[in-house]
Length: 241
Image (cartoon, rainbow, N blue to C red; front, side, top):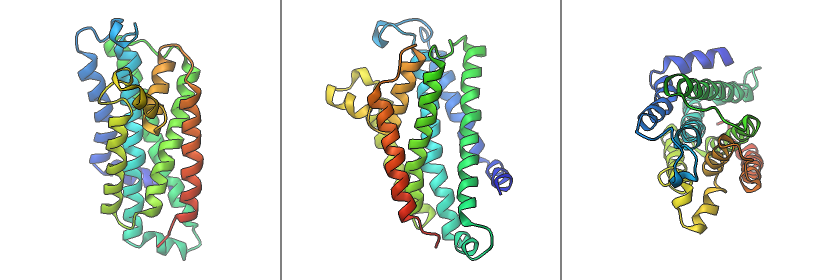
């Protein structure tokens, strides 16, 4: 079933373009700007390309897959009655949900490797100095954001509803997570909010790791809390019909 879902994902022309195109476009457009690879006092003495632009591109990609594309796909199956028919078949319907998650996580992993590879080869970007911390935040961020997406998928009856709820969750997280305005330039209260919301905690945790620091406990704890709470609610609320 995972292979079938992967083929369907690749046959959708919008999905590969979104998954690969958006993070690479962000990386190249902002990475080619003068001074992006040089340390800047505005960014705490770090170069913005490896410590802001690349983490931002990776986190936005995961968030788009998790809270917009994944729940919309599951809601489409519910709307078309696929989940209901599967629930009456010998194939456990949960297998379809697991296949969707695996395909989206694999797409995210490939795109993030492309971001790091293209950044390194084409732009001379430094790789994350704290690679272990970077991978830890990446995994926890994916778990937290996909748990939010699973909750949306559990509640949305149709594709349109899932898309609307996903957009309503995604854009505020962009604004409050330190994407439109870097965390350092937010008011002090909103800086804490940026470290609590799943997208902001992912971006800012990746930034810390890319610069060679340890991700803050607030960021890691927030990601774990979102993953646990949203997954538990989604498991209780999920409807197959």
